[in-house]
Image (tube, rainbow, N blue to C red):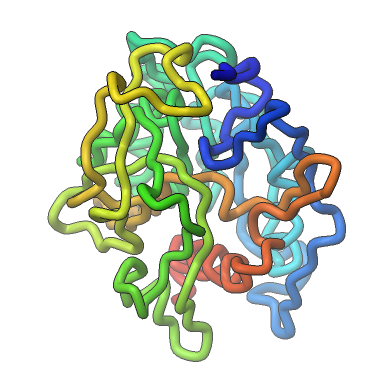
Length: 307
């Protein structure tokens, strides 16, 4: 059985994405375009969205998340990346802080888990949110979940440091029809409803009772919890600890003090990538992900209090 390639090379590739010849290269799909007939703001006049690139984030605005930035800019937002650690000075002019797949280490995935954010940064972020800031926290499978669990825990969220895998290996389409995508302020915005979203693995988490669930995993999923990345192979061993996805969610939003938080357990849905020699689509450009871009815009608008 073939072991994984270097962890830093494929930070948020799900297990279902493995191929017999290894992990295929992924690049941003520069051709991805989602039309916005009526942007929320005039070009460049919207609030600042700060994109975190200071915590070993493999997802950057020049890389896999370039289409993410392009989409928000086309809606009038000012999207800037930052390689600075979180401070009061950094956040004071920011409306929305986005962090995607932050990690404590790009290469070392093994337990014990460590936080990508320092205690001081967690204090600054939680105080900023409580005072009215908006946080979009996107994480993924091991080690991403553990890397932001201390930050998420400040808001009552408990993220599993594992791999969420569909038991039947089928396409991960969450829908209202299947009751895996729930109706709420974000998915049922009048005139801009989202009936389904496409995902690619990731992880699951528990949320406090006052949170609003966006999407659920359920019995269709098994969460594998390895202690070492070397345990993860193309064919999973029964010796790896695992739990059912029942009771776990992979998308939710909540209010915290005067502020707002959206958390999602998979980074791929908000990207638009091409993978391998066949340039297979992954993210908002995928044929089964036609509503992912609308979903992203609804999330940003909720965080911006535009819903």
